[in-house]
Length: 447
Image 1 (cartoon, rainbow, N blue to C red):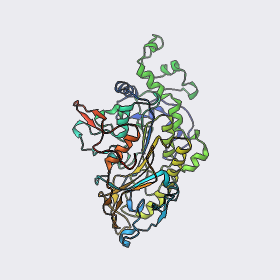
Image 2 (cartoon, helix red, strand yellow; image 1 turned 180 degrees about the vertical axis):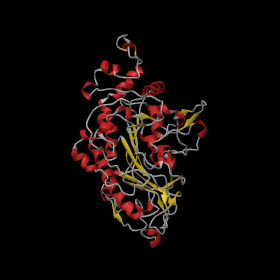
Image 3 (spheres, helix red, strand yellow; image 1 turned 90 degrees about the vertical axis):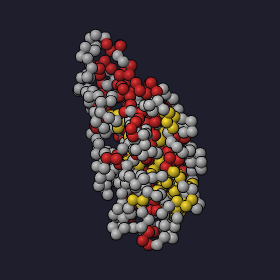
Image 4 (cartoon, rainbow, N blue to C red; image 1 turned 90 degrees about the horizontal axis):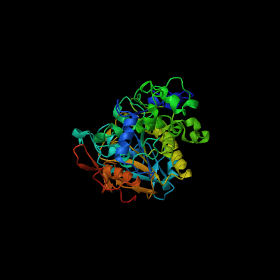
């Protein structure tokens, strides 16, 4: 493990700044796969250096579509719920009252009220890839969008990974899945700042001020030959190992993860999402993960995925939405403003969605149960035609009556915004067969 000695300020998810500055806690996917291995794989795949970005925010548990983006004012009381709609700054579009800040930014946003193609499965897999875990399972499964982009486009900067997963660890593990590499292999897994050790590289008693001294760094690595300096092996060291060290010691990556380097006023705008309520076996409402995501994209990351809150509201549905929704309203509106102020909004796509919707009928615990027939999504940025509400459900919120939008259409749109043509782009699977990224085209109303 490669340790960097720094401060110990604690972030919202319990990880300290010292933890962020421990490069040994950064990992790629499965154990045994090193950063140098990843860089070799990226080099073999080839790279393109255009930099579009994606922030994929997963609302694990299944957010209630009829209590967020399409309030059912005409439904009977056992279905309608407790919320009222509010007007947005786009005439004719209303959303839930817990999102007043987003309502004022509807002209920069899109709500999709008619998402179909979901399954009643508590996992992030489909929101990260457009597929289910069973698809091509014998070959390792389909790759997530982050992994596919890593394969197809490589890194913007060799010192910054293309795909980062910020999903906090959850007791229900599938909710913290940042997106799998599938048949592409661990080389293209998400880079996780809170993961286990990386190649057991350990740096002893070296401070941040001394990290730029490459020779002193190399002599401190207990996994490399002890005679590396005396024999002159450093000059012949594998180029990928040197690039791996560039990532580990890069101030760009570490600075992006360190919110003490951000303007305190910006940090305050996002909030911290505390106190964490209704978390149970899911993710905390870490508002600052959205800020870190912006910083990572700005540093050169192409895709950042994260998990926000625990939305499995079998009980206390309306209290949960008031808590999670209000916090999401703050950090998501701050992210929109932040991206726009930095001139990044047209290049960075933001999406917020979950694995399915919730039942129209309210149960005896003031909750809503699983409902895979229809769900919803919120999007912004990426050069899309925004200021829209796409699709609608029937009076009871049971099924899509206007413009059903398949989950894969959304994934295809994300690929399109990243500069990838899903109609012509394929990735070769382990059998040598080319596989298309998805089976659907992008949402025509948005591109």
